[in-house]
Image: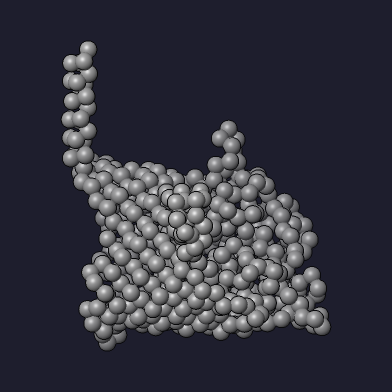
Amino acid sequence: MRKGLIVLLAAVLVVAFTLPAMAEHSMTGFVRVKARMQQNYNGTGGSGLFILPEKDAPTAAYVEQRQRFIFDWNMENAGARAYFEIDMGAWGDSAYTVGRNQGAALEGDSVNLETKNFYIWFNVPNTSMRFQVGLQNQSDSYDGVIFGVADMAGIFLTGKMEPVSYRLGWAKWQENTTTLDNDVDLYVAEGTFSPTKEAKLGINLYMIRDASGEGSPVGGNTNPTTTFGRLGANYGFAETFEYHPSAFYYIGLDGSVKAGPAGISGWAFYNGGKFEKASFDGGVTTEDVKVKGWAASLRGDMDLGPGKFFLAGAYVSGHGENDTDFKSIVTGGDYALAGAFPFYKWDLQILFPNGDDINGSAALAYNANNQGRGVMAFAAGYKQKFSDMLSGKIGLGYLADAKNSIGSNVSGVSVNKHKAIEVNANVNYALVKGIDLGLYGAYAFLTDWEDYSGGVAQVNSAGTGFDEADDIFKIYARLNYGF
């Protein structure tokens, strides 16, 4: 008996040591620390991740930290990826706790590991088809406006039939009751025609099927979608709606062309669908509210002297106060915090979310529908390497509401269209191999932004208008180790 156990144990050990050798292992990631100082950046009222600027806002200073670890197992035609994250919202925040985005107080000792992705991939032999199955990261073809850099569980297929490539996929955004049809699903179908290496044209069809009824989503928001709920929430109105189910569909084009040192890219799409049994605009009730939104963007990139320059513009339709249809768009950011990450490639710090954000992520228009108002926006930037170790960047951005979705608040005071101009800059220095130190700054000049103390626009003491919010700035030092 003992001899048999020894033989069995030896066999298990042989297998255990042999199997890992069949796959190549790698680990990548980073450790990032940001020491921040900011004023009027988040607002004490809070509204998801939208900045609600205030009057006479205090200056804040804190240090946040993020670690990400990516483990890859690769064989010839199959593999897997595990992607983990540990965030600390602020040094000194808490200890001996269980929960995400915390655990940096004295002694630490917290359970705070997050799973971002865990999926398998495999190629179909003798074809170009590749499947990814599991919790994974996916983006739309529209600068992240609909579901940019979002993690989701699903099945996605990519492949090529030269000169055409394609992507097909399905993801489960929300599973309520497994025995009922009350979920939220995403469907993706894309085809891209590339006649040359420097030119492409894509057609994209997406659909969000929402059968969630009146329940709240699992992503941390308080409404089935915050787009519709936020149309008047900041002004004292309450909007309600249901799904039985509803489908929001998106059809559009994207393309790019490059010639020498210059390139142009752009996209446009239409968003249709409907909200059912909706009450909005301060109590106007309709049985069905149709969604009729659209968005478009155009960007130019070029080499300019020793650096690179870009100029971009975008328009996302908004919901007007007298519109009977919902004229803005529905996005993944309405189902989960950061479920969409619009225009992150513009590298703005205050107007839109930034791709390098950690826990302190916030923006004046965190969602491209901008709480139903839509956006009209422009951005420009120039970056340059001064030496092998030193680089810098300057940027400029403009943001305005496309429409005024609320004509007046509950006090009858007129609500204006918001406008903001951002200037930003950064410098980065490579201290040693793998370690970068950067200094970043941004300032936003606000026009016609109300004071949102307490989360609701504040009418002045005379009752004749809103108190005006102060401008916004943030400065941070960034230390990053990549491996």
